[in-house]
Image 1: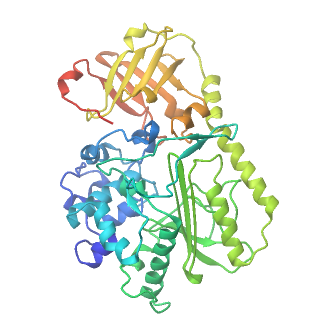
Image 2 (image 1 turned 135 degrees about the vertical axis):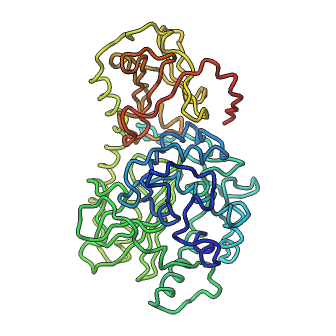
Image 3 (image 1 turned 60 degrees about the vertical axis):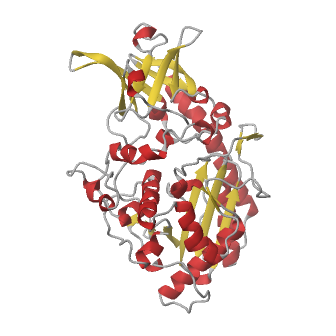
Length: 471
């Protein structure tokens, strides 16, 4: 969609975000102050991208769309702009709002009119699927005993928040139609072959496919991020988190080829797509469960190797799937064990009343409730939601951790991928030997957040703020 606007002359790849969205306001000394369209699309702004902040249980989002840009403004820059790859879904939502501002319509309407209609894509929707639509997959999570648990549909919002980052509903047939047009546009615009699709609406593929920032792969072969696509020089493994023991090496023993791929996950759904423009090949795997391994990526890897002419070792792929299952099924329990092993106290160091209250972020649009429960302990509740309420366990001094099992986590539609710090909550009652008027709660919802995490301050007069928290 951005390429269409650039082709029309409405945007430039080096347009600064602040020139389109006046509400984008960062300190002038912040390297992200002058972030451009290219920086946003290639995840090189250097701004923290904490998915654990906005993602609540049941596929809910923590804040309304009109508060999104201030939230983005408040996120710290943790690496100088254009020096490091930091995946950031917030940045793509920001880009969605740029598209809406420039085009004068919603991102769903712009997608439909500029791309879907010209390509004949009839089973792709923005955020909400019409009730009359048939053959719609339901989302599921997988419990540790490998049984399924049905979830509610995620990211179903009237305001379309995070549509640009992961809220589009589509089908394999529509994606193959789109990827065929994408490769046709790319190969013809790069001069490698003649255009096969007349009136192809996809433009600007040369800059879109250009690698903009290196990714964390320790290999001589290219692995970089373009605009919305990972560029991988095969043979290689896939995945933005780098090589892992449970991933297949694709293209081993065959001539080097350039692949473009991407993966995605929201509560109850995963996707993996890979393109080999040289052979005009595309592989799409969509699943309607979070799964207990990266099944979509494994299936796509096997299909690609089959297309290359490899003899697939079934047992080797089974072993990779088992290794992935073992890691995923034990991920959260390993984190909880690490927390329990590090636990230094069993009883809070202060009366429970000292901790209880409602704590707000600096923008006063995200709150955390600390409450006493009926068993003489504490509960933590994110945005006051019952399904986002968890038991707090004393950890050390004025630190606690919130506890849940794998099955409790996935049955609420939550991800299990967060590290130990995500579950730790620290309270501060003084600063530089000075007693604070109100206590501060620190939550490190992303491992790269500086220090102890974001401070949330108790506001005893929160009813005067006039805030609405309808999620």
